[in-house]
Image 1: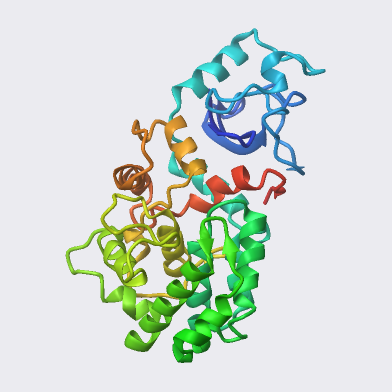
Image 2: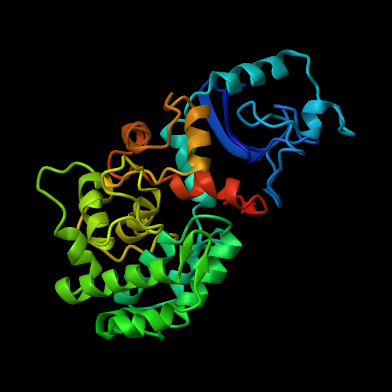
Length: 352
C-alpha cells in the first residue's frame, strides 16, 4: 500500500510504502520524501540518495492544488505524462483526497529540511549575526514587521535601517532621543512603509525597552493566566507597538488580523532549534499560533485543514488547532519546513 501527500507548489512528495517481507511475512513501513518530476513519475522507482533541486511547477508531474498551468499539464513536455495505469490512478486519487500527513511523515520532513543552511533568503538569517539576546529580539521584531513583499527587497531595506542603529541596536533604541531615531530612519522606504512609519515604530520599541527592560518582559506583561494561545497577548502588544494608531508595520489590534508577522516573530523567539534562535522563555511553544502566509494557506487548503477563504484570526486558529492535534507541545514546529520550499524553490535537500 502506498500513501502519498503533496506539498503544493514545491514538487515535493511525502510518501510511505507499507509492505510485507517475503521471508518473514512481517509488515514494515518505508518512508521517503522525493521529487515528483517527468523523469521520476513511477511509484515503483527507488528513492534517490539525494536530489539537488526541488521541481518547479513546470517540471512537476503533479499539479499543485489544481492551480496553474504547467508545461506538464498542457502536454508540452518532452516527457509526456503517464496518465494511465493503476499507479497513476492511485496517485491522482490520493492527491485529490487532500489528507494531512501524519506525524511520522511530518517528522521525517522536519529532520530533512529544518536546517539553518536552508534559511537563506529570509529575514531570520540576520538575527544570527547578533550574539546578544537583547539585540536579537530587537532586530527580530524589526525584521518580522518588515517581512512583507519580495524577500530580496526585505533584506536590502532591513540592512539599510539596521546600519543606522549601530552594532548594538537594543542599546541604541533604549538611549536614543526621538530626534536621533528620526535621523536614523531618514531615507527609509519599504513598499508602504516610509521613514515616518519606521521612525514611530522604532520610537515605540525604544519606549518598551525603557519601560520594561526588554521586549520579552513587555510581551510577558500582556499574557494572562488563562490564555491558551498567544493571540490575546499579541492584540495587546500590537497596541503598545503602535500607540499612534494605524501603522503599515503593525496590524490594527481590533481589525481581526491574523497577525502573521508578529506570530512569525514569536516563533523565532519562543522556539529553539537549528532554525529558530529561541531567545525568550516567557511562554511555552505550545501557545504559539501558525504564522498564516499565502504558502501555509495553500498547504492548509490542499490538506483540507480549513474551508475559510479569508486569511484572518479564525483561519489562523483553525489551522493551528489541526497542527496542535499532531504536536500539542509545538503546533508551529513544521511551519518553516513546509513553507520553505515554496519560498525558496532552489533549496537542496540531502538524505540523512
